[in-house]
Picture (cartoon, rainbow, N blue to C red):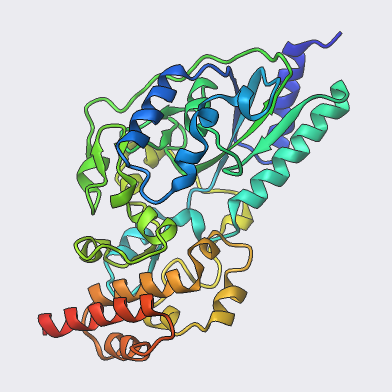
Length: 351
């Protein structure tokens, strides 16, 4: 006979040993969140991310994704950078590239998935074979809603999960399981009347509290979007070439975040403040070599150059910036050429 209370306590201990800061257990009833998802999709706020609509309600019904699921073990791993001030310094320097802090080190999907798999195997050693599925953005799951139900935090007005002791600087992962573990108490919300995240958004992508229009979000524009970035949004991107952290940087709750102990999440190749012109000079081979094992790979080399071209168009018209743009005026990619032409024209218009 399995003592599920004791097993849950053991899971907490094993998770901590694997580097997870917190875990919790959620039930699988997500009716209210499913309605929010349906409305969001109907409004077209998912943009070109067709897979969001394709997965349909499976995302809000864990038992449809993994038959037999009774609950979900939700895990949190912190990635807070050591100096938030450094992030602001980079954003204020138009000739340097801003990369979202989550993407500066190793791709978290691989690290979390491996750790969650180890946790599942440790559970199996204790109870014998059991049904489960590990998820780290690798399956259609409403992870923030589940994490809220598991007591890990509340969903903020910027749609990110917030915790009292870590703000939003953390990754989430899940284990869908058929084990009848005790369910945790959902977290309560603590945003109050604060609207800093809404007010700071460069592109006004947070169209209402708890409502994000991905089509205007810089993370979507620089990572998910494969075509041309809309002309009216390009100047608003500033020097952000992969993702955006503004809503996190201004959040009061992030003052409580502690620097991550995970060495794999530390910045690689000086990407926490590299010069735009230097990154624009990377060859395709250099891009693949230097982003190996990193989330930045998701943008692809063409997307990477497109993003940097926009940032260079927003940069001060220095000799280095103009020279960098002219070096790719005849780039093999029509997408890159178009964004370079826009950037050069912008400098001519401003000069």
